[in-house]
Length: 146
Image (cartoon, rainbow, N blue to C red):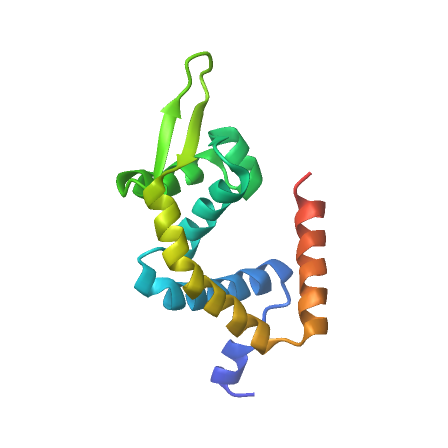
C-alpha cells in the first residue's frame, strides 16, 4: 500500500471517524449557507431559540449539549448582530436569551440554504441509511449524555 493510500485509511477509532465525518458535513453546510451570512452553528442556535422560545443560558446549554463557555462564545456574535437579545430577569440571576425580529428574519432567509444542504445529504444516502443514521445518532447521544 502506498503512502497516500495509508493516509486515507480510516482510523479504527470511532471518535476519530465521527469527528472526521462531522468536520466534512459541517464544511458542506458552511459552503451552502455562506450566501446567507450565517454559519451552521449560528443557524442551529437561532433555530433552537425559535423552536423552544426564550431560554435561560442553562436551558439552551442543555438543549444544544454545549458547555456554557462555548455557548457564550457562540452567542456573542449573534448578540452583536442583534439577532438575539440577552435579557436580565428581575427576580432571577439567570438571563433570558430571546430571538429578535432580525433573528427571525435572517432565519427565514437562511432556511432555503439549510434545506438545500439537508437535501444534498439526503441524496447521498438511501432512505434506509438515513433511518439507520438517525437511530445511531440518537442512541449515541442518549447513551453518552447521562
